[in-house]
Image (tube, rainbow, N blue to C red):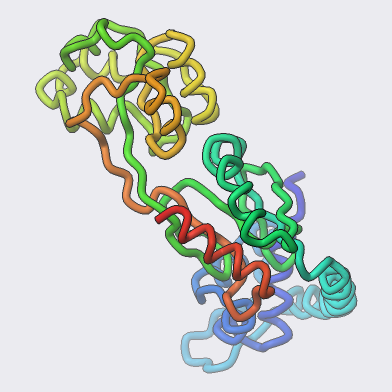
Length: 297
């Protein structure tokens, strides 16, 4: 049986207690469509309608099962939320927990933290490695750093920085012409944003349009993280389409070589900060948030 969708149940409690979708959205500080999506997901899990659809009705009408569920969660969530708030208040006011992926942590964030600690020695930063963004009302971190295009189902998000995809190898004299990429091993990132498809389509359109071109753009091993992609390129396993922000040191030191400096694929707003609304953030969290934006710029 599919696990209980707790986020949807939490959203439904607000719909029931507030008496409406839009009122719940205001309290949760998310979009109307987001709350509606949670209700639909919960209905699918329950296998029953929770809200009646009446075109001419201005107020929300709950079905019998909807009322039963609403009464049940209304007994559970208030004390549960109250206890969580107490636990949160017990956390040190100078502690900020950052959730991010292993690749961002090891290849971007960690190198910058010593500078932060020199500027703000009284603030404790804790790094939590995770691939997903959780619901911040029940989560255990203050700021998440993520790759992507935004649009997470969270209270607040802000673009952190751009990036670009670079064809890179550890052997500079092997690939002097972009057409050489038709005959060499390619290394792929499992993230669709880092796909070779975008580079071939942009810089070898005449070849990409052929069956051989499409086949080559997909050939080679696929790695689950950007860090592994970069490591494979450093090991000489082939040519990788790497994220410049995550391998600046290797490029600067010549460990990796930018094979075609004029032929990069730009990634606008490639990284994001995700968290609570600014007015709900602690002073320390807001300071770290602003520092991350300044560092990225």
